[in-house]
Image 1 (cartoon, one colour):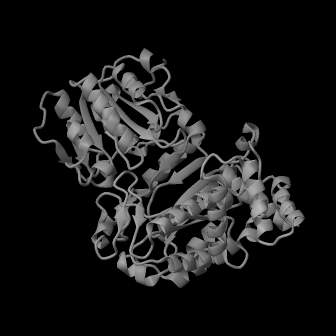
Image 2 (cartoon, helix red, strand yellow; image 1 turned 90 degrees about the horizontal axis):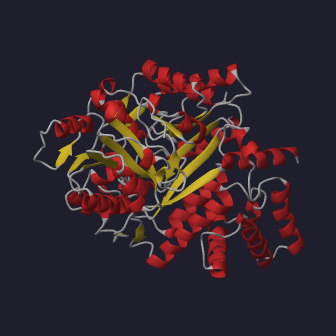
Image 3 (spheres, helix red, strand yellow; image 1 turned 60 degrees about the vertical axis):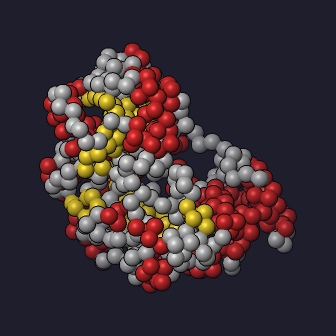
Length: 531
């Protein structure tokens, strides 16, 4: 295996086993590792820690795995590097497998120091099995605290306390991590960036509600890093800022950075993804957003619920009318691809209320509705409603809501299946022409009926072949009274329009900066506009 100056595992194994050459690598003193949800994802947090290692950076390596891999193989590949310290980032999606990995590591090499960090171990820490297995846990911000702890350990000054509260420094004290994205990352994986940290809002279901405010990185410094990424070939940028559009001046400068790149090289487009607050869209920001051409901008809009009583209950401040107006404006006056988020299972919200919010959002018309089910994130204040609203959460990750006093368990299961089928059919963009026929004049009720019917037919919500799904949708439409030929013609229009394809050729995927799903929505819109 080739060793690079920044000591990164440059060949993450797409099967989930980590670097294919790991057994040939020379020893590294410190390994920073995590289990990502998929190969395309990269760990921004680990790169921050590596960038702030100072004199220890030359002895530090990042090794990323994928959930679903063999934990014994992961342990083998980590220990083959003969580390003295292994730092693991723990999240809601990898806690179970990471716990197994830590147990293996401590059994095989008890002398190796295991250091944990990440949101999943930053709250309710000492009661967790993984924390009991590990040597140390850093809660909260780890950018500077993890390097300091590693220095102490390597100097033989082993701290007596297990849990260390992460220091929250000024952002100008933190070294930025973007140089540590490898050429492999830039070519094939998601490049996560952040112009700010934190959130000023207090929505009780969100881990960011624990932040006191939002903090901004110095903008010139940040944009200089974006320039370097772009020069290295990065074309897809996903911002993880929780409230990108709150500071209009900063937001416009960032948007202008991408607009300048698009103007300079329209045949080599960039693509940017931002998470925005729905009820804050001043005229100056609209002016910038309206300039982006198709396929270059994606906005994730957190609506969550349109019920004002539920919003008040969970400490969410949102002007619903203005939110609806802004989303509608974005649909009508920009080429941005819009994802709007809704959460089912919030305390105080019944099925009728959620259905009304869903139908309202459908009428506004965002390209995708991200239908989420409430989860109990460790540390969030949503649990204060547990007794009054009879919230029942799954005790196992990802701690999904199972029932409330307003939505019983069987109904919640129907909503879980609704969410899965909605993603397969609506959000995928593969049924763009047929979807309006499915929804008709009662979108939520109709699609819930379709989801119930599909589950009864297949007894599955995964691994349904696309061709079979299309046939089933046509069959359901005929059962709802549509002529069989008309139903088949609607499905065929999605095939003919390119929305339904078993595979997208690699060459075609490389021709655009936008993700495949957005490309399907754009293709469907183009066909509709030309009809």
